[in-house]
Image 1 (cartoon, rainbow, N blue to C red):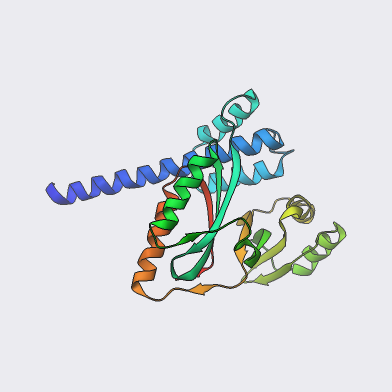
Image 2: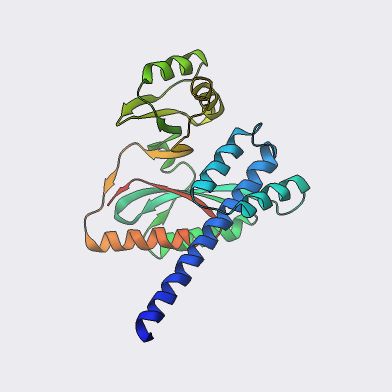
Amino acid sequence: MGRAYQNRKESMAKTSDQKAKVYSKYGREIYVCAKAGGTDPDGNLALRSLIDRAKKDQVPSHVIEKGIEKAKGGGGEDYFPARYEGYGPGNTMAIIECLTDNANRTFGDVRVCFTKTNSKIGTQGSVSHMFDHLSIFVFPGDDEEVILDALMEADVDVSDIESEDGKISVFAPNDQYGKAKQAILAVLPDVEFEVDEIQFVAQNTTPITGEEDIAMFEKFIDMLNDLDDVQNIYHSAEV
């Protein structure tokens, strides 16, 4: 066995660690979402979407159920959202969304990721104006006119809609997520969404070509992903 076995064992441990981080992040987000909007997925569309996404990422049901049960109890940790933004390696722009119970700790941890990769954390609004904050839905279909009509009837301010390769993509303002999803479900009640999220989308991408910049950018993302409080990372990089 020797060296090959040791390499495989280390790889398995790394995969296990990564899974544990994914489970932890979903568990925290489900808890916060259920606590804020209710523990019934049928009455809390954001929670239902989050549970569906967790299942696609193979998060065990007991992790999902634990998050919901904690929210039902009403006690537990007092997490709140925090958002940081700035310029990453190669003059890219980045937005980092967190759930934290200690803003000072989280800000310090995120700032270290910037400073150790020759990047610069900015003030709120320093780069977010270069991103669109959108509700994004992608699902099977080819009749975008029917979907567009349903969205217009529901008074959804559709940013964009497109149909390609048997899939329809809908983009709407982030604060119209619920209305947009209900309108789509009214037309396609059994639809399975491939994407069902609120995201920051860069208005323009920033190509990274130099090996040093690429390596530094990857280090930047890895360091952020290693932080328990970080939930989502959005950036303008095109590697």
